Length: 283
Ligand code: GDP
Image (cartoon, rainbow, N blue to C red; front, side, top):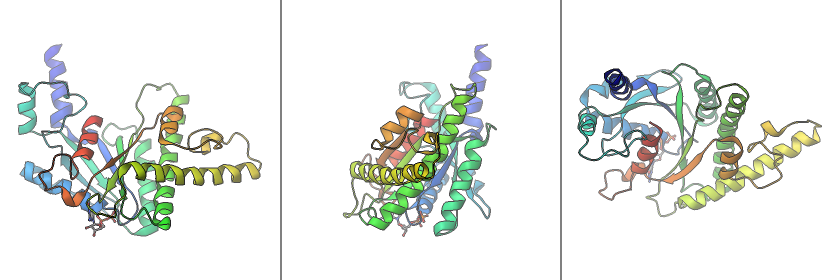
């Protein structure tokens, strides 16, 4: 019935915040903690009640974050500004859960990957992973070592999501959605920062090198049927691109620029707004 349906939508979208989980990943120094703290601070500004919901453990920090009411979601983007449900949203913002993984250097990365494995396998609606936010320091990427580090971490993240996607493809639930990745090209305020377009190209080219090396290693070792272990689910001989991954596996990667430090500025589209829009489209 209609009232029941409305109640269900209301309950899912407004009352129950635990359904949509996002995981923050990325190399150390990229700005994950800064982003996490900013979104948390903006949330307590929007509603004082949620400010004490941060939960810290040895392996992760979780906070319930409110989406600013001005940011559209996949379900309300076509509504007019006069829609009464939008008033309800500004009184009671749509929320999602964000998880940051503490630790340093390699430890942080292995913790991040194990969190990803755990969350991406979850079948519980409350712990199901809705999206991955992979934060990148775009001012550091012109250095070869930082680029290699960042790309190999992203490669491992995408391979986990690829394996999940291919496994699910074999089972019956083909219709369920894949977990998308936002590459948050952070620190665009710095004049040494690479623009998002070249961040995308550099990451694709470096990931291409990584998977060609891996593909050759597997072939030299005489392994057969290795495509699933190669990012892009092919023989690794063609050039890698995020488009290839989307076409072959269904996992999407968006590279979007922003700056945690610039979020107070009045400029539309600066700060973290475009990332919040990406999150909104997952909700
Ligand atoms: P994490 O290791 O990924 O958690 O990185 P942090 O959040 O600790 O950030 C690392 C450093 O980058 C800190 O000194 C932050 O203040 C700085 N930082 C984070 N975001 C930005 C940004 O958008 N612009 C600039 N210029 N610095 C930033």
